[in-house]
Length: 79
Length: 142
Image 1 (cartoon, rainbow over the protein chains, first blue to last red):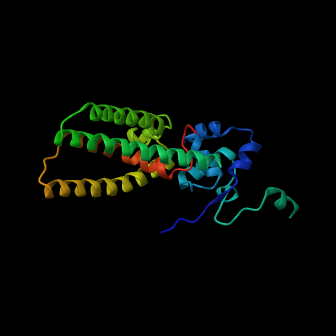
Image 2 (cartoon, rainbow over the protein chains, first blue to last red; image 1 turned 90 degrees about the vertical axis):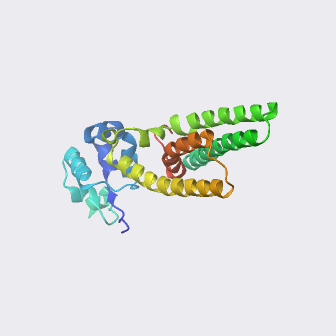
Image 3 (tube, rainbow over the protein chains, first blue to last red; image 1 turned 120 degrees about the vertical axis):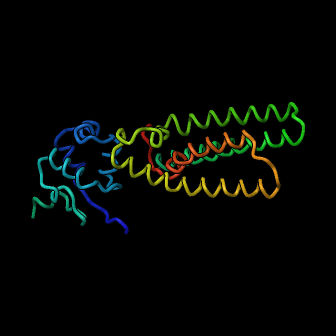
């Protein structure tokens, strides 16, 4: 079975919260390189990891992750 | 561009490393069949040096060695997935290589020597890291 690409807003949320990749990695218990892979959407996180990320950003999972390309937040604000 | 450059560099490192390992075995085999001379001794020694240097540069300095030589609890989920993928490929490559070698040695009725066995043990340990080095876009220390 081929995995679907999971789109995410980790990069923008991390910048908004002013935390580095290393800090985020320590908080969710992964290697900092894995954050890079997640932000570039080159790796689909497990459900457990997705929940951990959503807990850090205090947002529902479906706001951070999607199976369809995510619209930029600026566009969403205009809409 | 930078990523592509480092990937090519790593692939070159893998090729040099495995070729130098094969060279050590070949030189030893040749030395046993023929007579050991100065040229063979220097070539063998050079191949060992190249092997060690490429091993350090390609696998140890880049942090690739850790994937298959660290306890699972010290790896995150992406690293575990990467390791299991590399082990799957490495297992196939290693099995086929060893079976071909054993078959060839039995056809030519030659005993398997200790240098070949040591080289195969090293090969078994190197292969998973070599697969990761060959396929990963970026490593920890790049």
